[in-house]
Image (cartoon, rainbow, N blue to C red):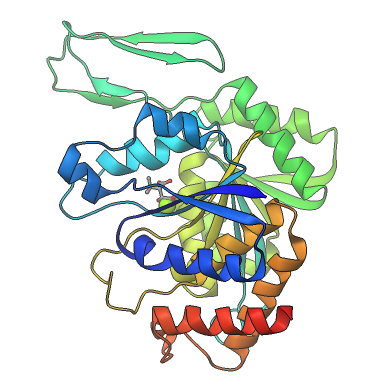
Length: 355
Ligand code: IPM
Ligand code: MG
């Protein structure tokens, strides 16, 4: 038996994720799902985002399936930083894999087949931030690298800072893991080494690590990469990006093959992994049975592959592609299949195909 933690979260995450667990459960009864109520509703009731106890429990699962987090009633940043970013940080999920592939009947461009490998803990996401105030020293500790940063200033809260950091240890293991996954072929590495010096450090580490692999690597500034990606996405197969550029480029590339509704992702560390659709909680459309469940279904398929249930993963993908080819489309793409009807349909055909 394999134990998986499930965090449906908020909005459409709540509407879709239990359905995805059903689809998986019906073709593979090795998997046990344990639900966690980590949500804005709970926060509004009890003022709890996520507890230390939940973090230590979540570390012990083989994998986590995550929906989305965020709610109109909560100030932007509270749930995102305290839940999703904290999970990536505390569970040491240092690589975010975001595949982007053309889908039948959905995509403007055919033959797009690329993956974005996004660094997932550092850069401007290191959560090193504060107000500069002489009476308040901000201290940041990093356990991986064993350093401490102390910041204070006399701007009396008139200046707010966010520090971007990259550490040799983290970026080295990141490139190692990415290159291990890519194994051979081409990779374009994004940065802004022309403007921001920490990306020269990033480049140097990338170059050093790439010497151990048969991968044809090249570098492109993130702005020019965005431009070239829109002009000709087929030119790219693997894109490796620092955290913030990876975040932006992955929303952009998902538009090339459909929408965010079709973009899955995997947050990967050495001990566990967390799978989540790239889209957010979309509270404006939640519970209207119109949310697109494909990104979460594909995230579930990525999780099965990670757990080495390759046949089950393939089965879900094949059934999904067959549906799209046969014009069984989500409402978002002009189809008539609501969130529930779409998931019921794939549930039915995956079970039939399994027998
Ligand atoms: C993503 C999201 C998150 C991020 C937000 C919700 C903090 O946009 O997973 O891409 O910026 O990483
Ligand atoms: Mg994003």
